[in-house]
Length: 124
Length: 241
Image (cartoon, rainbow over all chains, first blue to last red; front, top):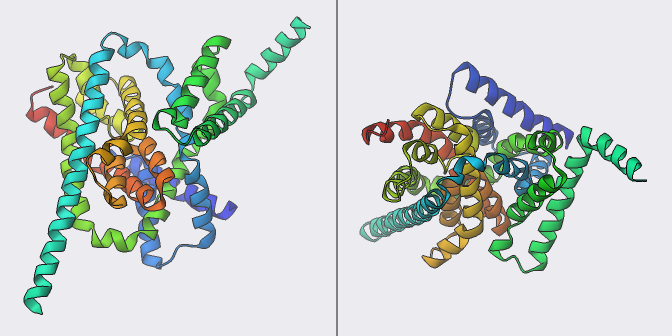
């Protein structure tokens, strides 16, 4: 557990350092995610203890967003003036984004599957 | 007696212990309530915990900074938790490889759609230019979103609010919206939720199942890499700045 948490923190630290030194627009933890994923792929397996710790942390991912969420309270004054229009914009855009992403991905999956099936038929 | 209580309060209010403990207790309470009630979307434990804590801060006259001094220990774990998303992703590597093209296609279309739909609806509904620009990166995880807002002329602190609201709305309504359009594949559901509503949506996706969570986390990470590149371009193409 301690070792796994250290691994996660080390990757986050490397990510933060890379983000700062290379002036990347992506935050350190996301770079850490990509690096750890790459290392796991190269190694070909994930240590059991790391998997346990990661799943333990991710089980409580919801909780981790609570402190930042409470911060809305402080900044709520910023949107008070326009809030109906802003909230409506946000909800409509989010809904459309969800639908468009889901449809495009499903359509691409089905298209590729159909192509693969076609290839099998013509080869067979 | 009253004086004694006041002095205990003054002492506790100065240490991180009180608000850290309060955050943990309230979250477990709202989580229990959510499960007990049969997991109705509107009782989302993040949303109810935020409301309860905010109400408690108002009632006790506690400034957010004092609250955050305690809650920062929870907040800090977001970093390692984000790195930890690599593990479920690694466990899905076979599906990931098989679906690589559809994922990339959905990523590009989805991230462009997230930006363009915000601009379109904001124009339609008469939202002011600074607010519109602050809304543009709303689907991206907050540190990235605030960076984008700064670059395109939005207000980063306003963006932070938008990002959280988007996440909460995605967590509350996202799965139901996808149910409505009849998409059943967990990979597609997860990827759409993560792309549109980042980490808070991903936290919700992990409550559905492992696959939905893994693909949601992946979409969050990928969108955090793509939107900083496309948002400034789209904004300048539309002459918003």
